[in-house]
Amino acid sequence: MNNTARVLMLSLMSVAVLAGCKKAVKPEQPTDTTTTTPTTPTTPTTSGVYGPNDLDTDACLRQRVVYFDLDQDALKPEFQAIMGCHAKYLRDRPSSRITLEGHADERGSREYNLGLGERRGNAVNSALQASGGSAAQLTVVSYGEERAVCTDSSESCWSQNRRVEIVYTAK
Image 1 (tube, rainbow, N blue to C red):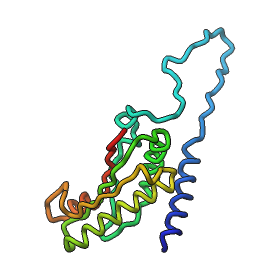
Image 2: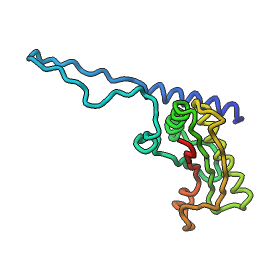
Image 3: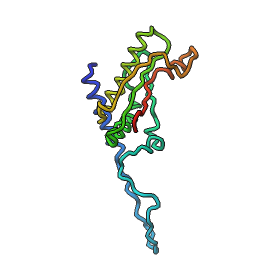
Image 4: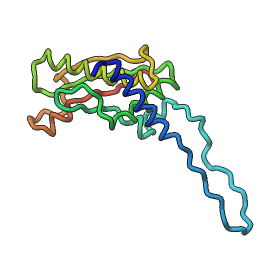
């Protein structure tokens, strides 16, 4: 599948995910006719715009690692919602910057793993741009196998090393 088709597919999937997430739940009207006192909300209403504090409090934005299958650089569908959240943050905060750090497991040559880490970083970069992020806010770096989070020689360990880490360099 060529890159144009991938970007188009990612953007369509992102739109579908975001469209499904924006449905508002209508509060039920009380059926009891007894006298009730009006209540005021105890929490302030937000405008829906992300702020710097949301990077630590929002469940979606706290997810900053994207995992890949063996020798693959295609983004898994389960990470599309995360891409949508981070892209929205980038749109809401034009001064923010992200470094996408691509990684690979220990199998393969150093050169192959550096290239694979870069392709993985570029896949996340494309997904963020397809969801509305700006290319000027994104930087891709590949570390290949050099920064492993797990050093055992097992599939469960290797799967933790096949990743892209989303690092906010400016919030």
